[in-house]
Length: 361
Ligand SMILES: N[C@@H](CCC[C@H](N)C(=O)O)C(=O)O
View 1 (cartoon, rainbow, N blue to C red):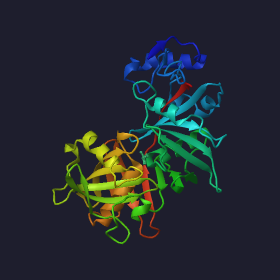
View 2: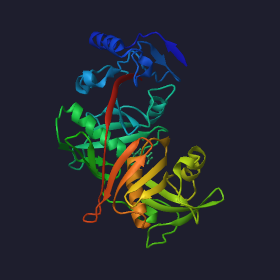
View 3: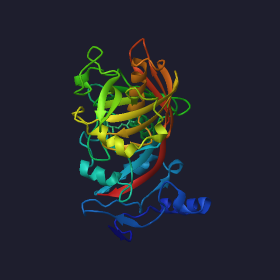
């Protein structure tokens, strides 16, 4: 790792003034979720240098992403960082091309929390296809490409509203690897998303566990490291394995879990040919659940939107809850409803802009 003085990207005078004003107003920058430093941080291979510096990290309210992202400098990626309940993403304005602006390897470096910007994934806002308004693609922090991301799509909707300068209530049609997804920004800024229908057929999830309720895997046995877990498998376009505890054991107490030990064993289990996201769930009541998640390609995260949807489906199929639940995730709550009328799942929660940044590629 090499830390060099700023040289390649200069701080626009108005950004510099803003940084100084913020420093004066807010005191030490060290506690802020963005850097006000003017240093350039060069990391790893020379093929990617992440500038936290010249950065251009600016308080969100002060500058519109549209004007920030419109600056075109070769070798520089301008982005906006968002989070949905602490599940954080680097959002890239990719509306002029159907090819992601950065490679999967570059995404890994950008997502690194020590040597990069730090994020659970990179999300690209691309031109729509099949008549949709936009296409969303995402790279996990390990560089793999999932089909869908629930918290990400709420961030995506807020990002689009910012760069298109839309105010108030708005909904978009978004093509994803999981098909058509429709987020709607509410008057209070929360985003409600029609997440479509859950996929339950074992081979479509996919899982090698045999269907035990028709084609679906519901409250089945999965042996992990010699322990028999009770699991239900649900795809929201991306695969989820949901567990409420071990076979014959007590209701899970998720705070007691050694997530970083057990999570990877589920993720890479031979029963999941495309790996899996795993939700460990505690039932608080018939309308209130608490979960911790180990995400495929990202590890322990503070929230997983597709996971929250999948676990309500699992809870209903196992007869543990009603169809409308609050799901407490480490980063905060999501409201989830699996509607009987259309079989669609609706997720409502926040998405927040954190800062704008630039990375030298
Ligand atoms: N955090 C996301 C899910 C992101 C994709 C996941 N890691 C996968 O590989 O399927 C969410 O909010 O849904």
